Length: 126
Image 1 (cartoon, one colour):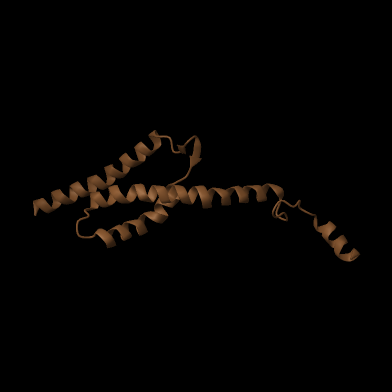
Image 2 (image 1 turned 180 degrees about the horizontal axis):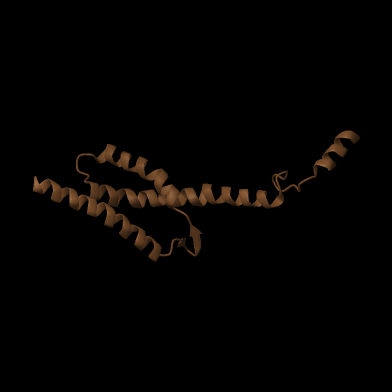
C-alpha cells in the first residue's frame, strides 16, 4: 500500500517539476531558430509531420524499433520535412499575405487598389 503512494507521489512530483523545468529552460534559450542566417519556424511543421513519420517508421520497422530509436530516427526526418514545408509553403504564403495586407483589401497580385468610387464611375461610364 505504501509503495503505491510513493509511486503516486513520485509521478506527481515528476509532472509538476518536469513541466516547471521545461518552462524554465524554454525562457532561458533564444526562441528563434536560424538556419544560414535566416529565421525559420519549424514548430508547426514538426507538429504536423512528426506523427505520420513515426507511424510510417513503426509500420515498416515495428519489430525492432524501441521508443528511443523511434524518436532518434523520426525527429531528424520530421525536422527536414518541417524545414521543407517552411521554405516552400509557409514562408512564401506569409510573404504574400503581408504584401497584400499593406496594399489594402482591394489589391491583388501587384495591381494597385482602386477606390470604390473609381469603380462605380467606371461602371457607369461604360
